[in-house]
Length: 342
Image (cartoon, rainbow, N blue to C red):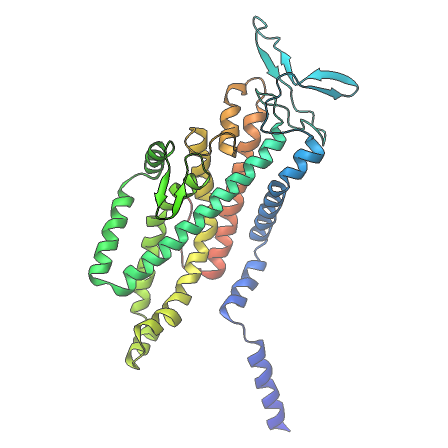
């Protein structure tokens, strides 16, 4: 009877044992701030993905077409989208202000008579797309370079480290701006792949490249520390092949470090894309992003500040949520890490 009870207790303890991923998920679920931040990001992403539905059924306007002579009925009163200016000499036009109704021109119009709310959602789609795709490129290249450099060492490590040092020597925004100015007016051909000027893939490629050293170097250092770990030394001692050690001992431990970087790199990519687009060297017309909408509203800060404030607030909320989520993911997967977005 005692042996049977002891055996059942042992089975229950084995079944109840948590793996590292389940433990990390349990820790993350208890972090209310991280869960709320994740929910905010889901809502923002869902709203941006619904941009075509909003433009077609709610705003009932084309957010990319100028509407200089458009009119709208508000509370039974017909008003022009671009109203004659009443300031100074009365020259020029002032865009329609926010109606705050869930309908056309909820956030008002810009200086070309376009619906700001619809453009905000479409711009969010591009900003999120560029940040996400650039993060995939950045993390993929950085992981390969960091793992290869740290694992093989020697000449390979020296060569890759010097290449990363060259990229590291340039300030991030200076390098991104320089690449954008050079490449924005011409196509890029890489074998059978051609990236045309004005394509969204151009800022994706540029942003994905400039942050590679900032991820590859920590991963390289992590791999070097893993190579000195006891479990790797034991695997070498029993005659395990290098590829077996790489696939079963190194990569599983590196993946957690890469996951920690995901929300942080997304936040950095979003800020970089907005900066480049604000300077007119990122997303090109007729496409829009939060950065280009801020540029459109720069001249309306005193008369219609919502045009620039709406995308600015969207960037702030998204980056803040990504930082909070990144802190939660870091604490759950890699408590000893001290990575932060400056």
